[in-house]
Image 1 (cartoon, one colour):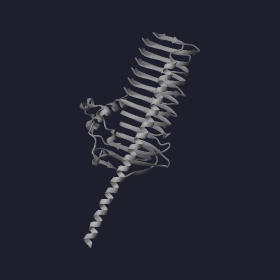
Image 2 (spheres, rainbow, N blue to C red):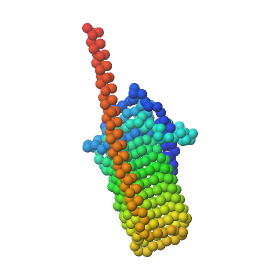
Image 3 (cartoon, rainbow, N blue to C red):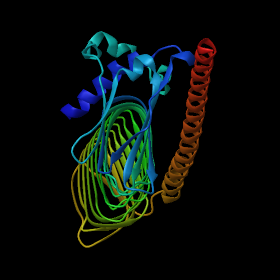
Length: 366
């Protein structure tokens, strides 16, 4: 939780740096493309727009462009087995006076754009991200720690995601386990996963697709989490007014602990459910098998909950996430193509000037 708090404060403070007027065309700088051997991609302390594409060879290619001031705050270098991209944000971002200035809608992550092409299966590690990120279908492990972000992620083998503050993260699919931490009011949408461990502190909102394995949820506050289907052990702890809605599946076994006014709804079959509730919370289960244990002030209903509503809401969230990812990818590719064309035009213009200078020198000789 300390790391999450650090990200929250860092995001709130650093975002103030991004509230700047649009850069003039002559202030835009593009670095020559850099090529590195494959390995792990590490991005740390990054404020800007990050695009990670998947290539066909074993090398990594890095393209960096942005305003002159923002370019000074970035460093790209090889580190062991892979590439590291580091920001160099001033320590003044920790000044608490800046935290109240945070407004993500006014931030300008487009003032620094980093585009990386990686081989399939590459591990991607992103820490302290403030801004936008688009990561393609890497099919490799993902570690993402962000605050004040809009991130679109494709298919990965496993995911460790932390969102502290505000923003939204969409992930198409996690082939393996998902470890999720939300501190604040962020939103996370994820497609199919193998297993999920989720900790939500605050008012975070999470929509999950089908979970092939188990689900473990810990909510402190008013956070919500929903899933279209879960198979495996299900353990839910709610302290506050949060809610967990699972449309279908087999919970073997099911354990629910509620302290406060939280709600749990399950539209599948629960095996040996054990329910504990202190407060005004409620539990609704479609059906169970074995022995049910209930203590405290639990309000437990066994029957058919409003599964149609849960399914509709989950399907809508998944469809919206997929559409957003496709739109963000197309937009990022168009921006990259535009930047490449501008760089080529600038290079051609510079070459033309050099040619004119050479002609003048020839005339002087004659």
